Structure formats: C-alpha cells, structure tokens
Image (cartoon, rainbow, N blue to C red; front, side):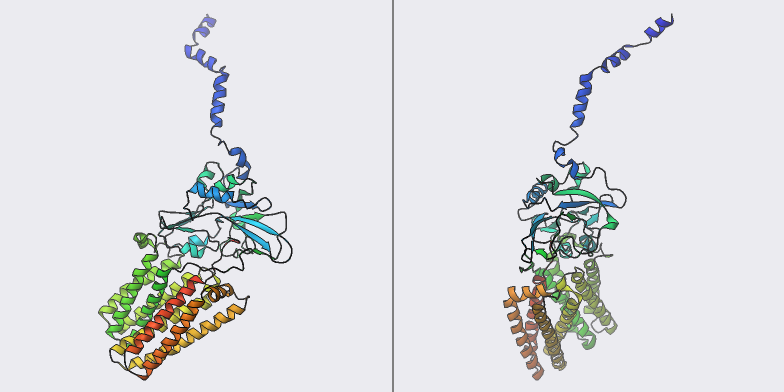
Length: 508
C-alpha cells in the first residue's frame, strides 16, 4: 500500500523536471548564451583594466608604459572616432621628448586628461560644470552646465579642455566612463597595438605633488595629476620637449580685452568722481561699465546661461568677479542718479576696486608665469588709475574746469611710470632665461614686434598730447590724449593674452 501511495504522489510536472535535468543541450545553450555578456574584444584588454571597482580612497588613473609606446597615434584616432569629435578637436595627443645634450635619445609621450586629484578646471569653473566622481575619481565635464567661458582652458596647465565652436562649450576626456562601468576598456586603451596604455587603481591621497608628471610638464603640486608614466629605461636629466624652444601666440580673447580695459576705465573714473563730484564723470563711468559688461557676454559660447555664473563663488575667481561687478553695476546706476552723494561715490569706488582685484586674480590663479601677481597687479591697477585720470581730465576739459590741467599732469606721471617699468621688465626678461616670464617675453619680442612699436608710438603721442593739455585749456588735447592712451591699453592687454606662453604637455 505504501509503495502505491509513493508512486501515485509523482505528477507529470515531476517527470518533466526529471527529463529537463538530463537535457545537456539546454545547459550548453545557456552557457553559450551567457558568454555573450563578455565583449568579443575582451581578450585584447581584459588585463588592461582593474578586475575590481575603486575602493574607498582609490580612483582610476591612466598608466602609460613608455617602453612600448611607439607614437603610432592609434589611441588618438580611436578617441576621436569613439567620441565623435569635431575635425579640429582632439582629447588625446602624442608628443616627443628629446635629449638636449649630444646623447641620442627620444621618447614619445601619449597624454589625455590626467583626472587630477585636485583638478584646476573644476576649481575655476564658475558654473560648476565639472565634477570629480566620488566612486571612480574621474573628472567629468557636464556639457549641459557649460556656458563656454573657456576659463577651464586657461586654468588647466596641460591644455586638456577643448572648446567646440560648433557647440559653444568646452569638452574633454572622461576616460570612457560608460565603457569602464560595463567592464570595457577606454577607446585609447583598447586601440593601442602594444598595450602601452592601461587603467590602474591609485590611492588618491598618495598621488604625488612633487616634480612633474614627465619632464617639461607643469609642476604637479598645482593639480596633482594621476597619470603614471613608467619605463625601465632611466629618463635623462637633460630630457626636454621637442618644441621647448619654439614660440607661439595664444588666443587673443578680444571680448575679454575690451571688457577689462573698459571696466578698469570705469573704476578709475569712479575713483576720480569721489574728488570732483561732477555729473559727467558719474554718467561716463556708468556708460563705460555697462559697455564692458555687454561686450563680456560675447566671449561666452552660451550667453543665455550666463545667469548661473555665480554658482562657483566658493572657489572660482570668475564667479566672484561676476558677483562683485553685478553689485558694482547696480551701485553705479544709483550714483548716476545721485552724482553728488559723496558717501555713495566712495562706496562705488571701493566696490569697483574689489572688481579689479577679482579680475586680476582670475589670471593670477592660472599659475601662468607671465601672469604672476608681480606683473598682473601693476598692469590692472595701473590701467585703472591711468584711464581714470585721463578720462576724468577729458570730461573736465569739456566742462571748462581748470582741474583738467592738474589731471593731465597726473596722467602723464602715471603713463610714464607704467610704460617705462613695463619696458624695463620686458627687456630684463628677454635677456634672462632664468626668469619665469622669459618665454613670454621672447614671444612678445619675436612675434609681436609691430605691436610693441605701435605701443611706443601711441605712448609718445599720448604724452605729447598730455603735455599740450597741461600748457593749454583746449579740450581737444586731453581728448586726443585719452584716445591714444586707450588704444595703447588695448594693445597692452592684447600682448597680455597672446604672449603669455601657456603651459602644455610636452611635445604637444
């Protein structure tokens, strides 16, 4: 009876399940189907990416084997194709190091974003369009946040962020983070025929801040780059980038040139207004300031999103400048309505000087040798007082005030001091290779001789007009002096941008 009961308890489903357990073809199919989750190219890069995700305090980093890099640029081509870059856009480059002495030696260097432990691009962005991923350490650019101000391009000492004219934004390498998340290698890693590039894990706190990532690169203490270059051959101490001795001009950034000159002119005129209390000086300063702010928007790739530029005020000098100039513009409008209010005049002048300070710090903070504080502060504040005195003297001359002659004397003194001190510093930098601004001075002397000659001519003309204004009362002479001075300041700021010798990765 018990055997009968046991037999009757088995159902048809039980029998089918028993049969399925013996269907080895099903098992084989399932295993084969599961293998499709592994990319077909995995065998080429499985050993070139970490087996595990970054742990606490770790991040991904590029590791380059210099012994196997041949400079074939397969990594450059793969990066360009995978990311759909514009024809003139590249997120990875290949340069060359050579030996500066008589020993024959050279080394190709491939580089992209170093995904720094302390990224300068993120620290400078006014709209927080960069973020350092807490899990992977990858420095990502948020395209939808970007306004195209290009300040990150000025801040990065490795020339990583690239501006796209087509999109009006900056873009950069993100280490193909989507591929890494899926267990696939970045395009450059997978494309290298010699497996010269790989992804490793590094302890973020142990990323070196000493020396340079490779000879000729910017010092590492500024951003702490994580890329590791390895070689079994010792790199000669005399190794240097191939293009070290070559000179080049940087972009002029004309909207910024005009904005800086006009805004500093407005601040200088507001300072003069504290003493003269003329309606014309308050109105003139208000007009120059608004013209400067309008022109500055032309530098943005996405000007309609400029209202978010205050978001990075905690770490970006550009955000601070925008906030200060916004307050300055409002106070300037109030002063234009109440030009005889001396306390308000003093407050406007002070907030204007704070704006000039922020403007100077924007460029000092890039750590470029030619934009050091010893150079930038005298230039920016000197331009402020020079144009302020010159424009105030022009206004008072047309109003028939004898104070215009006193201002012509002040203008002449400031102009001579500024121009002569700049020319002496420039001459010393040209003949002194040990000075940080030597390369920039050589670029200005070699590539901008016409600009220097024109500046000398404008300086001479402005000085003659100022002296004539001191001797007479005709408003024509201070007007001509102001125009020549203004043109000279524009050319000075043009040299400031174009001959700044921006740092890059070696050989690029």
